Image (cartoon, rainbow, N blue to C red):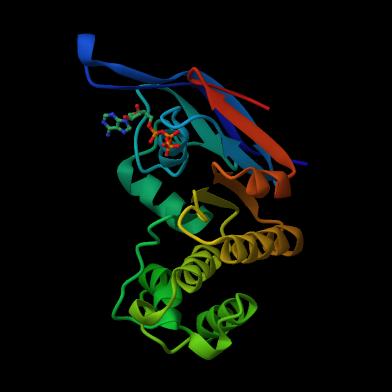
Length: 225
Ligand SMILES: Nc1ncnc2c1ncn2[C@@H]1O[C@H](COP(=O)(O)OP(=O)(O)OP(=O)(O)O)[C@@H](O)[C@H]1O
């Protein structure tokens, strides 16, 4: 197994002086390719903060991380955007889908932006992913007309579209009922097995955590597990 991700002495402090919140306090973490990991910890412990930094969407106060051997600590914003588009997929609870666009258009959007056009290969993969998500009948529906569980499955398909090595999911099942949550999670586990995609999934749900092979806990600004 190769190291996919290495986090070194990650510190994140919000605010200054007496108003400062010390969220991450020198967190270290190594993840290898193909892991399916849950990110656990009390509310406010820094799970979203960690995911946002790993997704290169926010800079740490100090420390840093590398992914695929690339040091992302010192990379320019332009290089980070390019790296993120190529290698990282995101699934958030409030999935950020474009409501007036269809499920398929939403899934194809990141690839079309990256390549400057929509290719047949992309369309084929987008359709196949939505099919796997059980949404074959819904691909041409505007996402505004889909249920919460269906929207979340569209968001998973969109995150997987570019074959990212790492998918960061922030409470991806947080607003779903039990049946939809386990459907989304089953699909994630399937893609992990079949495509070797690495997942880091923050959750408060012990059933979701139990489906992951690794349980990481963030507490007191550090990660264990
Ligand atoms: N932009 C910000 N400015 C100031 N404080 C922030 C900011 N973002 C997060 N925080 C603080 O950092 C701490 C960690 O927040 P974070 O959202 O990472 O926790 P979490 O573990 O994801 O929580 P939850 O499980 O409730 O989603 C909280 O105390 C939060 O108030």
